[in-house]
Picture 1 (cartoon, rainbow, N blue to C red):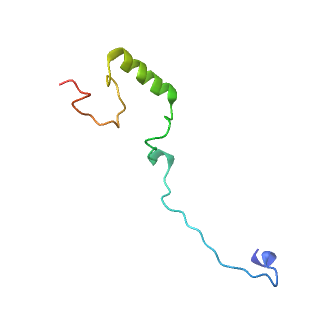
Picture 2: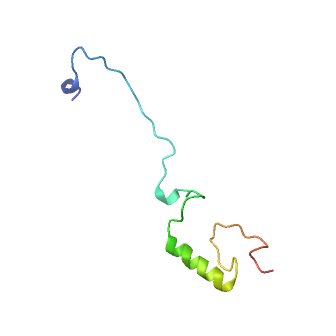
Picture 3: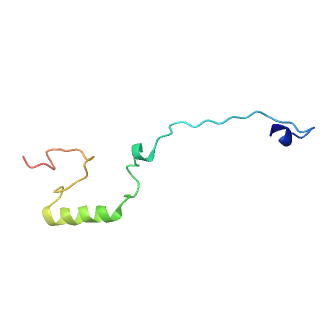
Length: 71
């Protein structure tokens, strides 16, 4: 194949490339400031919080503090 691509009198250069931090979608950390991936889910959470009070329901990755846990 290389013989078919070679052209006499053409200056060729070696180049290379690398890929770093390759991960699967299942292990991807979403951007904190990006739009929600599931707007319907966020709307449902907002409706439940409107009905039952702020932080009645929240995402699992939110910090649990005394502010959102009845003591």
